Image 1 (cartoon, rainbow, N blue to C red):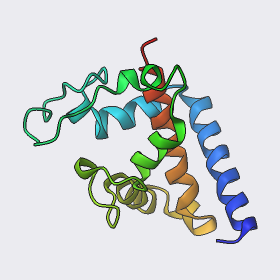
Image 2 (image 1 turned 45 degrees about the vertical axis):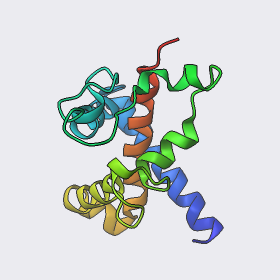
Image 3 (image 1 turned 30 degrees about the horizontal axis):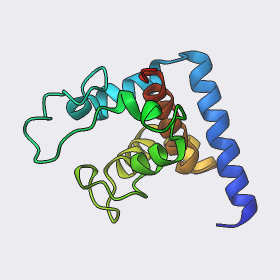
Image 4 (image 1 turned 120 degrees about the vertical axis):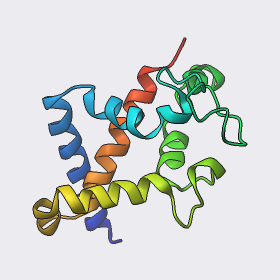
Length: 141
């Protein structure tokens, strides 16, 4: 992707996130979390969701991410886990990351007019950023 296309995608994602957050400050990220993450991580992020005992992987307590990183929230690592760049077995393979594909499919379905004019990348980034913001809000000091 060229530098200009990257800048446009980042700006589009930021503008979309800004407009989404202006309409509902925390609702988007919380809704994404409840729809996609709480089944394993639990509503409060403690790793106690209904699937936690079913899958063969220990579900981490994501409320302690900041504390486990010397008080710094590991934003980039969380982003990479959500978008599929880090190989997290329970999230699916890097060849087919669950949430990246899910967001792209939703973008194509719900925002077809917007995407024809721009692209799905801004939509996907906006969803991921909103989700990360909610995960950040779950952090315990």
